[in-house]
Length: 247
Image (tube, rainbow, N blue to C red):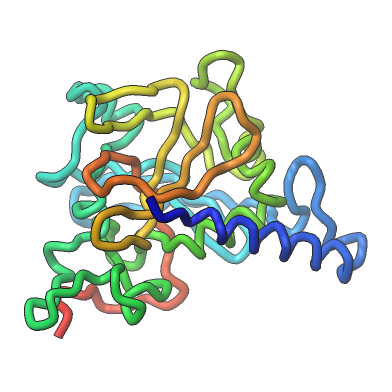
């Protein structure tokens, strides 16, 4: 399986460069990057009226809760509605990336597979207007903002809900909950893992971000597109009209 861990290696290299060239105010600490102060807000999804907490970390504004917008290709953990209220919904990658609407019938290319479709803000997917499914590179930007990939898990995880003393510091208000996921053998890992899709993928797999109960770091890797992961939407830098088809 193709890996997307190379991007994390680049992030670590960038951290070293910043540490060598920046002044003391730009340096990272064990609690995250001092430049990445959090700003808490809210947004309302006009499609169903649900309101989500949001948080600005560095230059990015993220939903501070998992998306809970109901679609045919989304599921509650263990198929229990109470888990959707707690964790948000789990989505297949096709549903998360909105490939039904982003398919070029003439070329047979899905947005996200072709390089022309992988720039930020190009894949809205299941996210509401003004927000989009983050790319692999945008996850890396988040890791840099909170310090580095080696501590990203600790500072992004919620301070409650993780098993085996796996709670995080939630230093930036991202509040990642251990919502579990669905693989070929069914639902599992509630309380132990958090998994989120990116819009970056190929014809068989897609890049996902993982947080673990027993690690301080975060992980980016490629997973089967049929898995069901959580979705965190990222606010667009410049709002655009929704993409409905690739012409």
